Length: 388
Image (tube, rainbow, N blue to C red; front, top):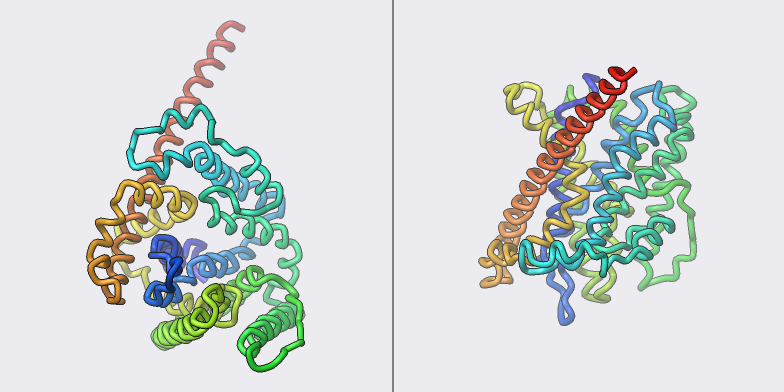
């Protein structure tokens, strides 16, 4: 394998983040009176964002043999937990302003903490849940920490040795069987009482991580057959998403709350995510101009920040009425699937770019703050040394 920052993986990181933004900004498929099947159909193609992140995590997690659990936890706290907590805090303090129609109206009044719900915020953190205001997407943060806590155990089986390979593949096989069993119970429930229950050996999240490691072992081999892998990957992804949409739409017509096959922990969820990963990872981006590669790496470095803040940004944008402008063609023709796809993608791209700009600005502010703090500290230490 090449260096740790494989450009193809950076592109997958961008694609995964954009898919997540699309998923959260698309028209909700369930209304009080009906199910919007077009929106549900599009949503079936947008469920692979977070699984792609898990696959990327497994792809790189065990490549540094010197990293320790404590070191990884410290890095996670600095890079993920602290920013996520700030996002939770901002959402709690300014939750009324976020959904207000004006830009400046009510912003300062929120600082009196009249609507701050400390119980909601800290209670969910203690319970390790993401049910806090505008924080539903932060379940990824809690799951990420759990994966890191599993790292010492996974390290024993995620190494390229005969015994470890057999052990890892056996664990993955048992988990895959339990997922297939759950799918079979769901599919056959109208026809028979499927009583067989197979408990998950590991969670679906950990299975994604282990599959990411497994794919990393065959990365060089995939590059040798890149064109074939790419074609098969895209065709498989498309077919699995179509099959997923058929099953989901069939289920919601029977029961409007039955969206089992929309989940990422089903067999179709795994197959579609892996297929998309294979299709994207085999593209050769290394021959692109250096400027283009630089931009790809810069955008990829903002994806975590975009993921954390995008729900706050798009809710504020919605409150300002900008979403209505993007979706104006759709309001005139709500039955046209392609019109909805165009509106959804253009609006999601606008939110993605806007969040990217915000993340860059926040980084500039942080760096400026660090620079000012360093200067003040240096001056203070110089004065102390002079007095002595």
